[in-house]
Every structure is written in C-alpha cells, then in structure tokens.
Length: 181
Length: 124
Image 1 (cartoon, rainbow over the protein chains, first blue to last red):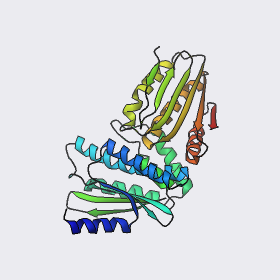
Image 2: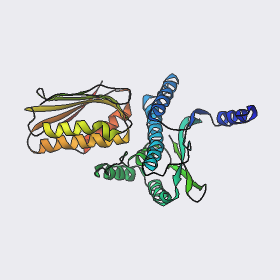
Image 3: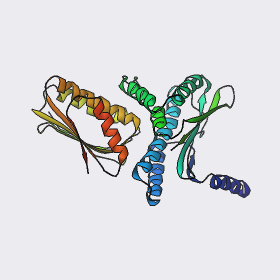
Image 4: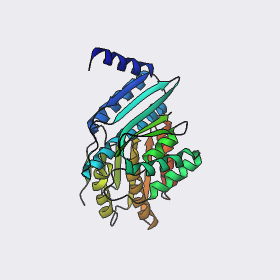
C-alpha cells in the first residue's frame, strides 16, 4: 500500500477511536489472539469486569458469526470472495462499540433483515423471551451455531442493533452490524 | 465406567468427570472453534453414565465465560441431568462465579431458571 493511502487509512482509524480493527481471513486462532489482546487492553484501562466481558463476548459472537458463515458457504461449494470480513472495536465517549462486516449471499438477506427488525422491536423482556425460546430448540444437524448470537448481542446492547445491507453485485450483499454497549 | 478427562485450553474448559465419586467438574472458559464437536464426548459419556450413576451426582461448574454455542451445549447438559433428577436420582449443580463479574452471576441465574434440580450459586 502506498504511503499516502496508509496515512489516510490510519487517520480514518484514529478518528474513530478504534482499539482494534481486523480485516482478512478469520481463523479460530486469529479470533482467539485478537480477543486476548482486547481483554488485556481493557484490563489496563481499569474498567469494570462486566464491561470487559460484554465487549469481549460481543466481539467473539461477531467474529465467530463471520467465520462460521464463510465456512458454511465453503462447505456448500460456494466460497465467499476472499477476505471480505472485518471486525472493529471502538470507543465513543464513555462506551464501547463493536462492529463487524462481511459479504453474504443475496438469498440470505431477507431472513437476516427480518430477524434483525424483529429484535430491534423488542424490549429487554421480549428479547429474553425470544432467547429462551431459541435456546430450547433442538440443534439443527450440522449447524455450527445455536442461533443465539444476534439475540445475545441485542440483550447486551444499550441501544437497538444497527445494521445495513448494501448490494455489491447480483450475487452478494455487504452486511454490517453495529452493537453499542 | 471410565472417567472422562479433557484438559483445558485457552478457549475450552477442563472436563473432569469422576464416575465413582459422582463428581463432574467443568472449569475454565468456553468458546471453542466448534462447541458441538467439543461437547460431543461429554454428551455421550453422560448418556451412558446416567443409566447407572453414583448414588449422588454433583455437577461442579466454574465457567467464567461461555459463547452462545457453548451456552446451548450447557443447557443440553443441564437438561440431561434434570431428566435424571426427575426420575428420582440425586443430582445437583454447584455453580461457582467470581464476585467481580456480574455477568457470570446473571448467566448462572438464567441457567438455574430452566431446571428443577437443586442449583447452588456460589460467589468467590
């Protein structure tokens, strides 16, 4: 990358008060190592343990969602264009914001946006009820997740989940999710 | 019946199940690459064990963090034990948590809500 582009990128990242930004192929070891770095950093900031665990757990759910989705499309023989995943942790005033983005197949967009709209319309009690209902469902064969990640993030968030879905071409949308803690 | 022991890693807990003593320990953090693969041997061991368990069985848990797919696995483990309890076997849960970590207490309380077996939550 050219020096001036790198400067612009770094300036953009600093303006957003980012603690960590990772873009590239997500492996389990990347998720784990970045997670450790985030926790070490937050511990040095002397914030409450429950706040550290909220940031860490939302980060893990987002990063594992990106990784599991990518792996599931690979398993179907329809790999996602390389390195489209990104996870970012930043600070706005006195609270943390954990965001992620990744490409997804156009066919998966309606189901995801319906789910997110439903979660956005629920209060704490409603989110807990949906969480309990989902957690009692039998696991789907071959699934890597339990379908609880988004609900759990919505429960930890202090504001409704923000998201966007932007068409990239006929086949893919870029999905971004922002969780305010 | 053989004991079950899986050593802890930085993202998966210690599993230490002693069949004769009826002491089943799970300790550490749980966010493995694939939770269902990780917990599969735990489910199959428990399924066998609960056919003829020790007179008193204690599930002793010290989990400071679980990702959501591990939470689902833990719900399934608790449901298996709750089933044994409802059939009249003596089964209980002791859940340890770090008193600095409110989230760990919230999590333990939510697990306790869904089962009828004795469930003790202990601060450290």
